[in-house]
Length: 332
Ligand SMILES: *Cc1c(COP(=O)(O)O)cnc(C)c1O
Image 1 (tube, rainbow, N blue to C red):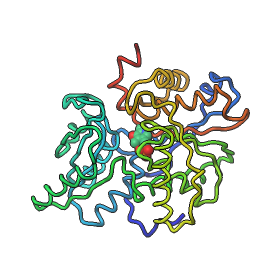
Image 2 (image 1 turned 90 degrees about the vertical axis):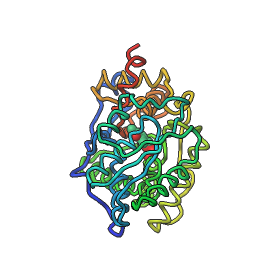
Image 3 (image 1 turned 135 degrees about the vertical axis):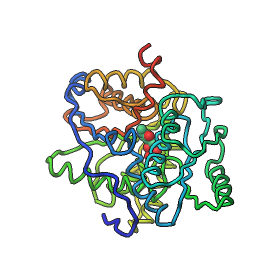
């Protein structure tokens, strides 16, 4: 597709690897061929999926003459870490509003991503209780900065608006070029579904390319219905931005069965998945997103939800910085 009319900073210098996972496939019975797309290895401090979205969001901020970014996230937000990293690269200030989705979970001395926020010298962190209206809270910070003569730009949570999601529309072009080059027929794509920009961008990109590859969204925070509604809303606004014909609602498929008690909450199936990927393939997942997504993948393979002989690609979106905050649980 053509995005040349949208400003874009190029942070990717090539394409991320698409690799087979033969040992994991075998450990799960050998009937399904598992592959992995390594977006955990995207550039940007710590890597991960937000870099694709930030190519478009940072470019939009710069085009508007912004000198400060404001964004929001949870206490161990990968999105906040990467927004800060790219802000530093561009010489912009960066401010966070952190949502305490688990009460009293913000610890200014915590490790993982929080440590990196401080290492990269975040300009300010303000915490708000779980369930706060994050856009309103970020607007408050923006108003404050404007009073100081600054030019703030608000990056939505997870970078998930129609601009940020263009990063995953363009991911589809990269992916299709790659599988065509490798002559690799793919039957399913398994993606994490959180703030929805990744999932929605992929659905819009596949539709725009007239490719009917089934996409399984594995939820990390919400039940099936709520998540599908949220993904589809974003799909529609991407379609509008790109002048695509209406996209069918049925293309959005989410599974909420692997969330456990909620966002960032521990589950046994997440732990098993992280250990399996680490020990069979030497691949590091994360406890909040890809660990639960992989729990879904493993469950589907075991239950025979993918036809025998099918080839399934797992999109690894990064996040391993948070592993170190879950050390005790993962090796208990
Ligand atoms: C943000 C994030 C996701 C979820 O992507 P969304 O576009 O927010 O749905 C998945 N994995 C990791 C590691 C993330 O940081």
